[in-house]
Image (tube, rainbow, N blue to C red; front, side, top):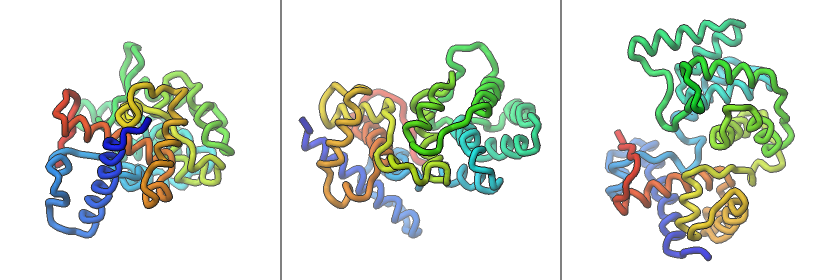
Amino acid sequence: MINREKLGLFEYWILERESVRHKKDMGQPKPWSHDPIFQRYHFCNVRREDDRGTKERRAVVRKFELMMDELPRAYVASNLFNYAPSLEIFLDSWINRNDTWIDTLKQIRVRGGKVFHVAYVVSTNGESMDKIDYVARLLAQVDGHKVPDTNCRFAFEHLRGIRGLGSFLTGQVIADLKNDRFLAEAPDWHTFSVMGPGSKKGLDLIFGPGTTERTYDERLFELKENLAPSLKDTMHAQDLQNCLCEFSKYHRYINDEDGRRRYYS
């Protein structure tokens, strides 16, 4: 059963985060919100496509004018690095059919430069090896796969079968492929999403404990059906998944609970 108080708080988070984005984009002076939590902490946008990092990485991929069948590997790399400058170094090396990007990124790291964004952690899955070498091996595996472009779920299951590509990261790759030609016409464009740890927490807050991979789709559908019409009609499943993750952070902050905190700067 839906907790109406939590649902109202979830809707408030969506509306307030969108309001912050609009005020910022229009160049209004801070504060963009009277809510002290929004003033102090960083939250992703309601829609992933509005996030600065997504825009920067998308611009890098489009700059190289890749063929359709090259997009899956490009967006796997995009999400592994989650950092536009590293992605550009990789793609420039890749289209020239060499692996100079590996040494280039290692040199940047030695000099104290940034290679990976810390928004979410990409691990080596317990293997004792250099993270850049691990990414190189993973991208080589992706390069040997023909990813289906007819359906988001098929593409997800195909990529998810590659050892080292977790469910959450693969879901982010599909989000990119949906918005750059590859899966633009997929019949499940609006309904596809994948549960992540944050969206599980968000659904558990609204419905109570019990969100699993088996109950996720049912709960997400029920959540959308109970949203205010202005939100229900404008949000697809991956937007909702994204918002649930950010909402779980907001709920943790207002209750001063333990956990990682990302401050706004």
